Image 1 (cartoon, rainbow, N blue to C red):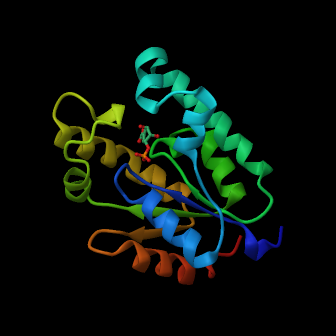
Image 2: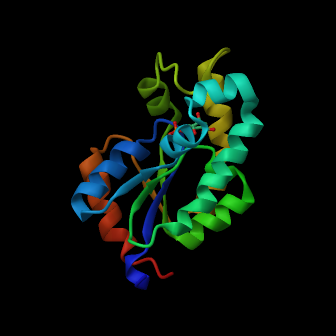
Image 3: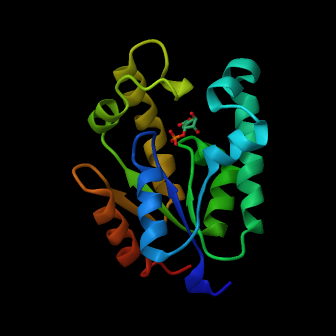
Length: 176
Ligand code: S3P
């Protein structure tokens, strides 16, 4: 693969817009988009909620790491949208950086809470005080996302197409 033609990898918290921005990038760059959550569900043959419920988070994280490791098989440059917990494992951090340009979509807790109000598809945020959970997790994960990424883009109050254009312009300057 040409060095400039490496994958674009989107990381960040739940509700940051990784999937929707990924779809915009896919359209704007005419590249295929991969979604690691969808790949996990296909591999396990069940939804993420069901994996967490029947096998627990640790099993989910093991499948997630396998999916990340399997991404090296894609030779043509693609857009990769990752689940919010992927960068938590060091092995995944290394793997993502090797895949291409890693872009952190940084979102404020208020935006996450607004977007994920009533959401039932994220087991990590179910039960208890959502605001406390989102704030605590973001505080812990923020520095991990930053150190895993080559580029950080603030997403609050921006349209997905605009974010995608910004990523295309700024990621060209990333030296790999
Ligand atoms: C998770 C984020 C989810 C999904 C799973 C766990 C996390 O993906 O992988 O529910 O730990 O942050 P999204 O970031 O696409 O919601």
